[in-house]
Image 1: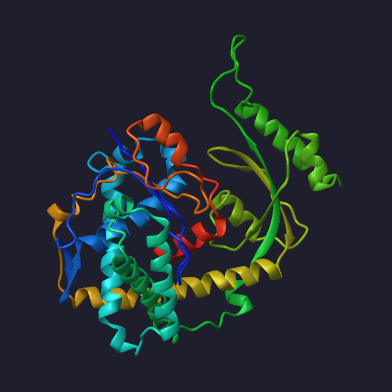
Image 2: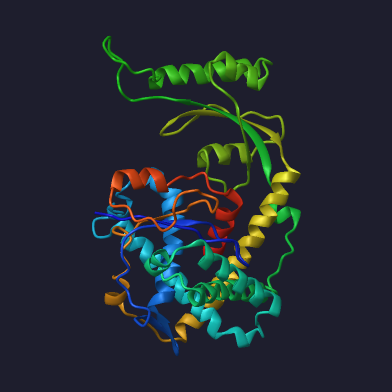
Length: 373
């Protein structure tokens, strides 16, 4: 039976959130979970980092996947826990890989950053009882090391991306705008006893034809949609857009502003679209930022993958298995919560309800998720 511990992880250089965990620690601080180049990743670092990441997973996905989320199968051979832990291990190895290459970019921590990390670690220790810290390997030195690795990663990324071309022309990012209406249908026949409220294919086609005739006759696009008991949806797009349907995009992409497509038949329904602008400045500017982000991610991954190819990385899977998410749950918890942070509970039902409140500080958890990524 699970035991839950209330754990609070306070704001640091990179803002963390709060965590609530349960279970007993089975991994030793001295265990070697993996080796990256000449650096050994010890059990305490791996455990704290894994619990930190686990807190993010459980906070954001447990409501969808349920209490047994970690045993849920993502495919025939892999559980959600196994899949998540594989990703977490890759992230942890990447932190150490970046740390090994700080000399390539002359990256180091400032005295202010070191001080902030130390203060965050002190706050963590003060906020959590000894038994809590033991479960998640949350001693001051370990917390400091994980925060140091996070900060190094952020500073390394900045340096690694300095040569990325951030100039994007309007032509390269140009976005158009349209409105479209979808008339979906169900292939199931509607008998007298049927409870289905979906249109048949024939009914959907009739509505689409009636809609298009009304628009061509001068009825406002949105009003014509309302007359057919549906809504006109807005969308910005370019030739590479795939939603809501590639055929719809292709047809609209050929039109000038103000022009309307014919009724377009797809596997899911009938569409009619109207181009409202052949150049949307706001959407184009957003696309520029997306292109820049893609260039940055491509450059970052290119460098990291190159380092991986040149570095010997060894994982000790038997040691890594000791960190069990299914038996030791972790959830984000507000720092100001009144509950006893050192209380052990053997009642699974009551502790689940008490310690999985998702009303934590949004800014902190958003920053924690960003830092974890």
